[in-house]
Figure 1 (cartoon, rainbow, N blue to C red):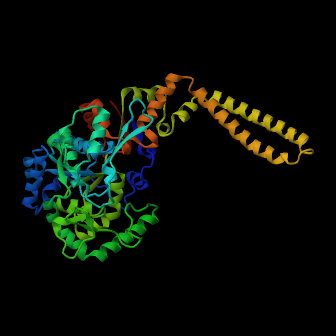
Figure 2 (cartoon, rainbow, N blue to C red):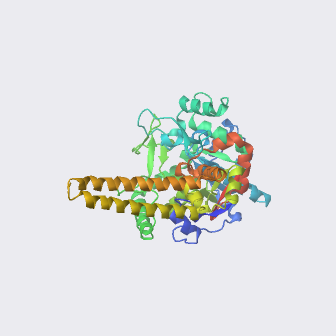
Figure 3 (cartoon, one colour):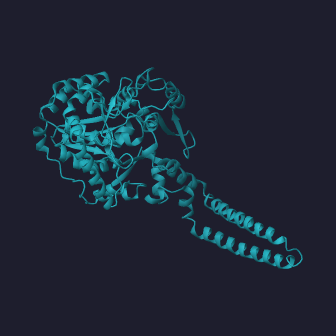
Length: 495
């Protein structure tokens, strides 16, 4: 099922306009396959070796791919995400699947592709990586949250933190499963995420640790430029902010206190991110949300960057910096948007003629819309009854008030209570009517609960691991098969 992105709740307005052809802030030129060999110039040999060895630790053998990539013999595509516990939300799988689909399609046509996935290990949002939402057993209307709480406020980079034992215990108990190697005691969020991804995609995708020292050293020329041209960069970002605001688009990353944008951090000996010092070392330098894409583009020089809506909007904000700093700009592409559902749920959408915009509402609203005559009759009777009741109360007041004026306040309060409960009675009657058809009610409830649980779009919050536990390799292959990069549609994939 292909549904327009415009009907996806909360879709970024800039991205919708951009997909419809507005390229004022971000171009959408086609990828020139022949330019790859001319772009990879001056790559550090120690970086290639470090990428090879780090991937080997995760069970990936990518030496030959890296050698071809370093020589400029392949088209380069990249995406990335935080190293969330048990793989993070479904959209993380969509990004990985977008890379795999592009690589497979291009290589079928004779164009070799190197696909990278950037592990955002320098991020310090512990709550984001240490929270997993899964459908509650036998009760999909609610999500079960598996999470760990940080004991102290800290800016420690999450990639280097060990996965809390309480997270592992909750997950294993919920799915009644043996402890896998990627959740062994003491394993870090980075290694756990990487080993899980490697087990699904093999060597098809090369993983890049954002905190790899050799990567940081390769980025030193960029870091030095950022420090030396700090005022120019701040001015360029402020000017772009005004341009975006004039066009009706909010900034993805706002300036601190409305004055200056954060550009770089320094990671101290305790792995905490702090403002950079005068003696900043390249291997201890950490990027902000605005400069991370610049580091990626300067060092790895991808031909294509695949991002979600927020990441695409980042590029609209920082494209002025690519030109200012001489960093090659990749072709920016929107990741595929995919929701997944069991076959029975997908069949219910067709059987009961549920429209795309209805999925993101409620089961009551969907079913009520299919009982217009009965609902209308209940509302008509309720209004008639309320008018008759109010008329009788008015007559009581006319008789009683001349003898007991103190009764006026009591009557007025009673009217308010009666109106409230009368309206609630009508609402309950409507719900009772629409639930008479239990088969339809159950099917519609499952559709909404699966694709819009707790009023959140499934792919944004629900763990893909939850579906993998049930469908295994079928989940991964079906998402790869259906995902569409740069598509103005999102898909509902039947499992």
